[in-house]
Length: 262
Image 1 (cartoon, rainbow, N blue to C red):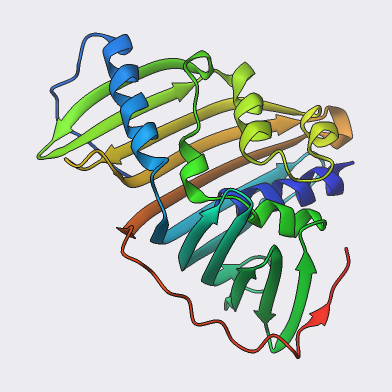
Image 2 (cartoon, helix red, strand yellow; image 1 turned 90 degrees about the vertical axis):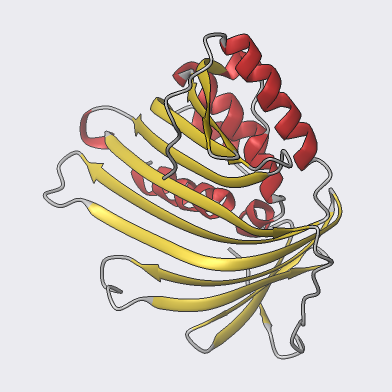
């Protein structure tokens, strides 16, 4: 069970992988803050293409294990949203984990609902029915698909011409957010039954045009009990380098990519 949960968590982190501070001019009304945040979410629905960079740190501490396991991932990407079901993507990433401290570099592409990965000289592809490929089949603007009932507290402040939204999500509702935004991952419903969120804090910085500049998530969760108990913490940061700039992706020849099934 522990291995299954950890595997699903890695998929989730990749899907969502995809620190900001504001001034002291906090708004008194959380309702006004949410209404303003709703406008930012609506603005992000107009995203046609985006260039971004991301970073993710995840640490697991399992019962009965002496050492924590830490995984780090960072990269840059391009994303073109032709429709909700037709997304093109290119992402260059570096990943470190136990045994790979020097870093594992790779490139991931998505075209016609097929994920292509070039990693350590190995080239393989997966169609959208694969759970890893399904996790990739989401647009980054879905990171902001947060409804009011998921929020326990929200404040708004100004940082120059930017607006900073500090959001604390209800731990009981954080799973709703996870299933809503990574729900196309096969087996998600069964996996999340074993998870409990202890913290999910989100900081969103929007520019004066009302479009998102950065998203930062700080989360902690636990699963199981006894020998199967495991604590997981992760931080994800996303910075948009450009939105709606008529991006183009130069895809390579995929003819030598081999089919991979998981």
